[in-house]
Length: 273
Image (cartoon, rainbow, N blue to C red):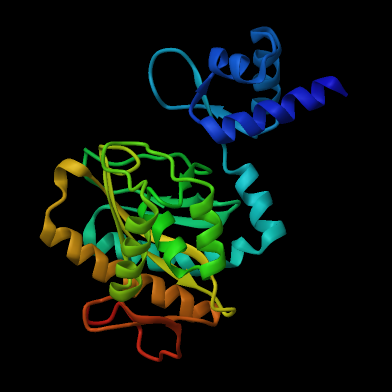
């Protein structure tokens, strides 16, 4: 029974830290490296973990197995089925990496990724947790959430990740208001200095955000023009996914939502973008 507990603890810790090495996991869990190594190999044999693609010392990441099981229990599989064709079209229009994330426990979790063909790219592992206030996907979801949820999140404090992370409550409230007005969020190195993105929330039938879709670009490749173009594209893509799920954010003249309301939409949002 203890071996099972150790394996589950290791799995959870890898999900939080991935890619994670044996030494890091042993320190975090306060168990011997040999115990961590046995658990990692067991989880690899069972198809839950795999070595990362990086070089040097072995580091571990989740496979898609935990995600597939999570989708089966939460209904996210239907979200993915709807989203992937839209993501493919979106990637074809911008040739940048496209992410799909879902809100979970005060964060957003990356559940799908389509990569750019360009050699310099953003690579984040599936299952990666992203902060609500310091990532484009997170800010998109946060802006579309109810005021009570937002205030609870603000009350917990805003962790600083880089020099540009928003950590002041009033400044974040103003940022969320801007996101609601234009329909999309941006991240300019606020979580990692090398990562920039534009993201829009996917609003479901209930009127609550069920996901966010983003275009992710190395910060060195971002310009004000491409950022605005990507904002228009993610707004349209999010509206198309939301419409298929039974609820949609109306896309305004600037590409963003007019007031964040869930409204009917007949036109295919990517048409004419």
